[in-house]
Length: 113
Image 1 (tube, rainbow, N blue to C red):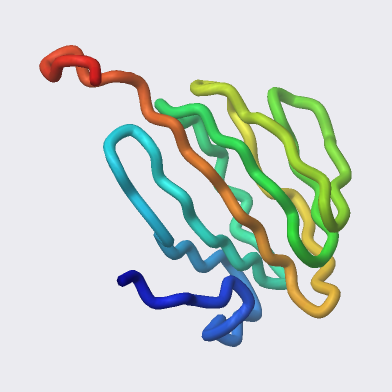
Image 2 (image 1 turned 45 degrees about the vertical axis):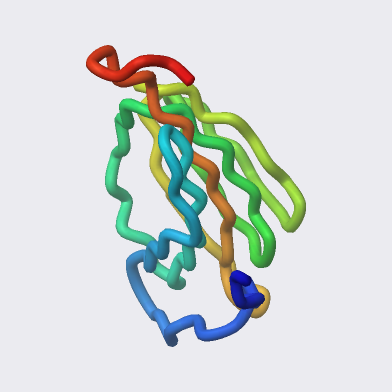
């Protein structure tokens, strides 16, 4: 039996940057928990996979394909593969916590199941 874990437990104290933690991975799917500090690292991501993100706590401003998007608790969106994006601002309340689901493209060397 798999033990129960709490999404809001055991988070590090974080002032700057971001903390990424894989919660589950299988095949082409990865679920991750992300904690953003008061000063996120404005890395421009261009990922090979589609990503669905949900802001659980706090507020954030993303840049997605050159457009600014304001997010609050409960807001979610899909970031298609190879869409440039970055976190511009965060406002923790009490923290800036995300849940992300990544869907990777099929591996052509493996059979589809």
